Length: 220
Image 1 (cartoon, rainbow, N blue to C red):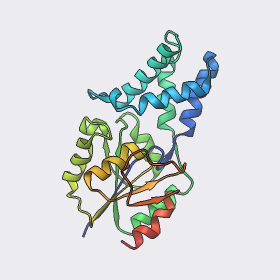
Image 2 (tube, rainbow, N blue to C red):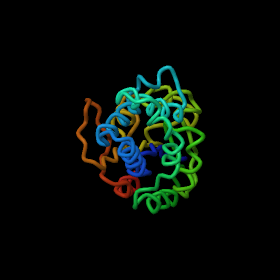
Image 3 (tube, rainbow, N blue to C red):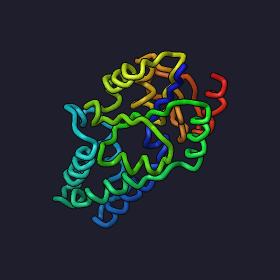
């Protein structure tokens, strides 16, 4: 029987701290409060209303910088760093345990599948950093951003997932764990920051780092 693992990327496999530090550094250069800028940057990106109707992820990033200009009463100050923000996104690095864990999952004969809200212009460099083979599905492929269930349904239909052959692994609670519950998917929440659920949805399993999934999956 084929065995499938689907993964979120950002925050699960790749550490976004360098991107967030870049946003704060830009805010410092412009002369506005960096913590406020970062909070607004993340909030805009994570609001599903800003991806409906569908927009490509790289355009979402540009719109995010434009809204920072608007909220701080600026003109084209954040937006002019658009290319640098995209480059920071392309150059994210894996968390320390990720590569070794992925290699062990491959040795257990799992097929690894990425499900990311990212774009074709960003993902190739991210894949280079992960160094193992994945099937890749982006929002750009399905014209839907997680947590839109259309994304999950498209991937499920393609591989014919069942409760016996598939589990989803992700850091994002609202973007991944909640829709997994709605899809009746088994899930592992990689809860790196010890967040509390903000909904009734619960993962099948919860871990704090990716390597902690290994004993779970070895026994499935």
